[in-house]
Image (cartoon, rainbow, N blue to C red):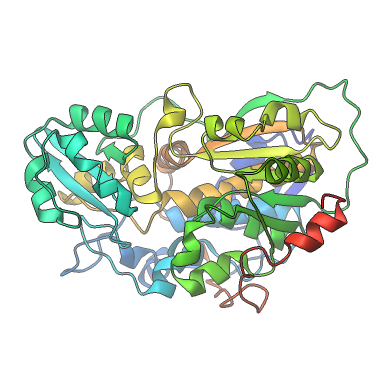
Length: 447
């Protein structure tokens, strides 16, 4: 993906500025550095960090994470600002974006239990694994996973005792076949890992429709990474339609209301019945109108709805398609499930912390989600600005592995002055499911 030498000015200090420059250079921009931000000593920034408080034992002080993750998140924001100098990003900062769910929901560090409570580090016979049981149905998969009925739903202590009898590889392989989200506690690979992969690009011979002044974003994703991506695109000036299935809406609607409002305020809500021929036709038609599409579904699930991403990006609108996943879109990995906490373990963050302090601990709160959402927004905006027509894949695990590798030689972060985010970006809450369905369908002649 190329920005064709577009000139950008990065205005950020230290690690944030270095990372912003690298990201934009990766995308083909010509970057100039400038630093007007007031810098804060690294020790002061760490002591005031909400993110830093999220790693460590529940009954002890925080454990320092040996990576400047908030500063790297600031770097992505600085890269976005460089691509859209007129955008309203001044009140956003990396530390807040990485910790805002925990702050709003009152979550705390809890050692080998993720702050959200649904993922835990468990000792296997020959190592440790992270297991996420976010859905009630996940507990009913455990007898098949362990080949014995030894665990009642919610009984983590009994589960931990059972897991100790099995080697980690066996648990991972069998669990993935069953659709469990789990990962081995392992080190980050030494080979370079890209933060995005361009899987398809529309042929240059196709004649696109005239570009809109600001993009229309259709967001099919749920939970955190994708919604954060579209929230940031909204800040850059995009119009965002949150598109959900009536039969299976975003599960985060049943979660913490203030956090859901934070992610979705100001977005239009369209809900369609994907089980009907009409609903599927309306879905495909709305996607054909989009400039940017965000989804976090398995490719097979989209194909069952009659959606062909490669065909859509080659259509007259030439949209950018952002495909988010846990582990990637390869033939094997596209079937593996991951959430933000177990993705952090799979990437090597827990291993990194263990080498430093000798404890098996989670890093942050579902860290894979906000970090991937940030990078996805940058990829989406850069692609739209350079003509679109691309299928771009980002995985939670690969984004984090890329960050570990990039930060390996970084100095202690010099962070920009911390800026607090407003409680809800637009001053209103998220819209009720389907509030804008009739109006949006009428606008595009899809009733």
